[in-house]
Amino acid sequence: MRLVRDAVEAEPVEPLELKGKADPVPAYGLLEASGELGRRHTAPLVGRERELRALREAFARAAGDGSCQLFTVLGAAGVGKSRLVLEFLSGLDAEVVRGRCLSYGEGITYWPVTETLLQLGARPSDEAAAAAIASVLGDAEEATTPDEIAWAFRKTLEQAASETPFVCVFDDIHWGEPAFLDLIEHVADFSRGAPILLLCIARPELFDLRPGWGGGKVNATTVLLEALSRSETDELIDRLGRLDDDLKTRIREAAEGNPLYVEEMLAMVHESGNGDVVVPPSIQALLAARLDQLDASER
Image (cartoon, rainbow, N blue to C red; front, top):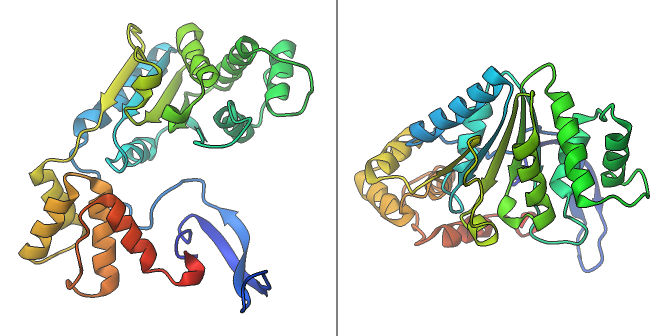
C-alpha cells in the first residue's frame, strides 16, 4: 500500500492464503481511485516557465479561435514531463480526458483511445461515427478501418468541445502503434470549429517512429524538456527540504539535472530521519534502493 497510498483509497480485508506463501498475505479492498496520477511528494515546478507559458498559449489559441492544437512535450524519463502537464492542468477551465500507451500486450493499438472514450462517456450523435466508436469499445462486432476510427474519434472530440474547451492528454506516445499516431495526426489536421488541445507526452524516441512529428503544421508545437541547470537543481532541493551542504552537493552531482532523482532522493532522506544516507549514482540505482526499503510483502 505504500506505493499506491496517494493514488487510491482502500480498506483492509481478510488476508489471502496464496500458493507458495507460508503466511497469509495482507489484502485491501479498493474504495476509490484518484483521478490524477501523482507522487506522494509533488515537487515544485522549477525551471519550466518557458514551456508552461507555451502550453498555456497553445490552449489560449484553441479556446480563442475554436481550433485544434497539437502540443507535444518531449523529454527523457524523470525530466518532469508529467509534472509540467500536471501544473498546466491544475485549475484549467476545460474538460480533460487522459489515455496512456502501453509498452506491452496484444490488441492495444487503441488502448489510449478507449481510455479517453470511457472517461468521456457520451457517444457521437452521428450514427456512422457511433458505430465506429462502438467497435473500438468492443460493443459491436462490425469490422472498422483505421480511417473510420480516426474520423469517428475526431467527431467525438468535436462534439465534446462544442460547449467547453477540451483537452485530450495522451501519455507515452513513443510506445504508440502507427495507427494510433495516424489517428492523432488526423484529428490535428482535419478538426475544425472546436476548441481542442491534443496534449501528447513522449520520450525523444518518438522521432524514431515519426521523424516529422508535428513538423509543418501551423497548429503544432513541440517542446523538449532539458535537464535542470545547477542553480535550478539547487532551488528544487532547497524547496523540498533543508540539507547540509555536503549532502546537497552529492545529490546535485548525482542527479545530473533529473527532477525525479531529486524528488525521490529527498523522500528517502526524509524517511531515513537523518542525512546519513548513501547517494545512489543514477536514477535507476536510486529507484532500486527505494524498492529495497520496502517490506518483502510490499515489493
